[in-house]
Amino acid sequence: VAKVSSSGLLHLLDLDASILAYDFEDIFPLGSRQVPGLRGGNDKGNNKENLMFTEIEIRGKVCKESLWNHGGFGAQYDAQVCNVGQVDGRNGGKAGYFTEDSRMAVAGTGPLSAGQAFSFGIWFRTWKHDRRMIMVHHANYWGDYVSWDYGKDYFTLILDKGVPVIHTQPKTKLQSTKSINLADGEWHHIAVSMPRNSCLASELDIYVDGKKIGTEITNDRPIFQTTSGRMSVGGYGYSNSGFENAYPGYVPYTGSIDEFVLFTRPLKNISSLLCQEENDHKFPAGNTSRTRKCKWLTKPKKNKQKARRIAKYCNRDNVECAVTCDSCDNPFAASRAIQAECKDQIGFFFLNDVHGMVNCAWLTNTPNMAEGRIQEYCTRTAVKWQCSETCGTCEQNQSITKSR
Image (cartoon, rainbow, N blue to C red; front, side, top):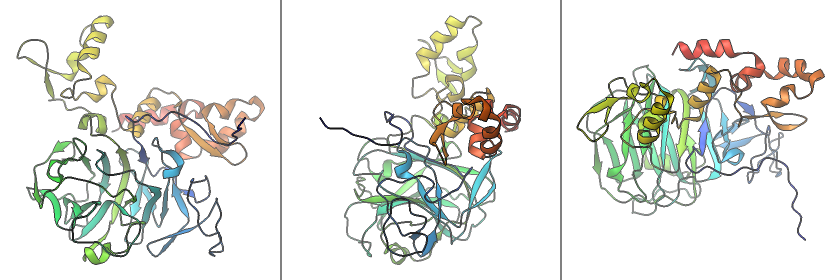
């Protein structure tokens, strides 16, 4: 009889939920949790391989820190980072501050692959309107040359002097039809979505601050991603060393980034990703030509009638009422909603040096140790937010939520 023993957590993967999700509330030392499949040099910088390494080189910079992945792919897709500072974020928490010396890269292969549909969203703020900056990148991690002949695709989102531009090949480029400047020192959100598997590059949907923008394509072709790619934010990360030569003048991103969330499916709608709804959004209701606003869904005084309306309309693609329908896709915004209700997040785990990964209930499951654990761990930003009931930080989190 085969016996399997291991440490860690086993859970079913929800393919509808985000698989990658990073915020900047906490930046951990490398080795704070194991990244399966990744090996690196030890703290003396030699080439000895070990499982719990403390540093790794990414495009000429030695990185000794980590951002934990809060998406479904878990620790194997933690990001290795260096020279990323923490500044005030758009939600009252922390954002990451990037310079040309910053690195944020994921050693796990993929998650973009072949013609599989994907979508993502990223919050950012920059004033560098005179640069062509790399924001999100996915490409093969081997080689030193980017071919100009059509092969498997890569994916790069560029902020080209404030204008969002997507490259999938050196000759294939998707860009806005209008001149816009997102490098104006204000917070902005960009979302990108493949509407179906193996769609044309021209079919990619780009949303800026919740609004779909018009685009134009150069050398259109179906999207077929490399199957040996790696993801990075703010630069080229672990990918092919030839990108700098293929795109002279393109530089790493400078500015703030708050949240990055990625799915292996098309966006349901932009309202669900942003976890907000427009006051003037209307959708068709009933058998007439009448349209309704989101608040109509919960207008009836009787709970049964409210429930019927929500069940009938909230699953429709043209009903962009994420708040009313409780259909938020963003795990961080969903967590903030839990905090506003003063509840611990059930699926949240954090690292304890002795016990490994523990949840909010661990803080108080040994009564004579509860006070000490709360004092020690509730000072961590992520624990304070995710375990707001146990940590006694509900009032603070509610005030932050109401101030947005």
